[in-house]
Image (tube, rainbow, N blue to C red):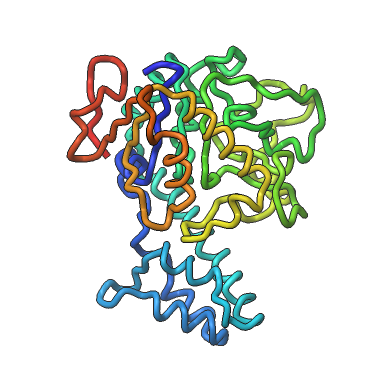
Length: 327
């Protein structure tokens, strides 16, 4: 692994290190939503049809959210109902990811991977919403170490992403220059927007908000440490995550996502080694397929490998003489 290496992470990677992390098919509280929205005819009908028979209320989240994005024959009222249900479903996804992290994370494996990434300067392209790898990369070095080898959320996502306390405290602002970029192509559970921001999100609208980040006196605070709860009132409720649907128009709607995808394209074009870990090329990821087709096909200067449960022995993912357990 070196600075021309790019790891592409899918849901299988998260499930391997967070065993109870949600998958596309699962329990997302749809029976409760059906009861809650009983008076909203269109929303109730779509939710009822989405339930997989004999599963006790499980759904295919990808299929359901794709339907909630709307059809040409949906009425204006139906679209308003669908928007509300979509918000609730995505909030449930965030809640399930947070609960899965509490239930248990394979910290040993993720730290080894973070060490290999940091020491080599490799970059990561990920479709996952969780912030497990983010935390591990951040904790690799002392918080006051601002060298490029130290991944930092303020610059490591590919844009100036200030901590959420920037909503209530002003001070010197700069973007850390990180050799490794963690490029989250579908957003992240710790990306939150300033209160009142609507419509397309620019890079300056997005802040990182999480318990594992500790301020390095950037704002020279003379007041007691602020808690995450103190800052919630200054942030939009929903995290910036792109739903797993067929037509992901939000990827081009939000300038911040266009910037992240541009960085991903550049890193992939420069890469000599690309490794896919736990990524199954779902049929709805048309944008991702286009990205990889335009950056990796017909190239003789790049080695592409895949790590799955069956092919884990094919790759030394850690760069230390060992191989991963697969995803």
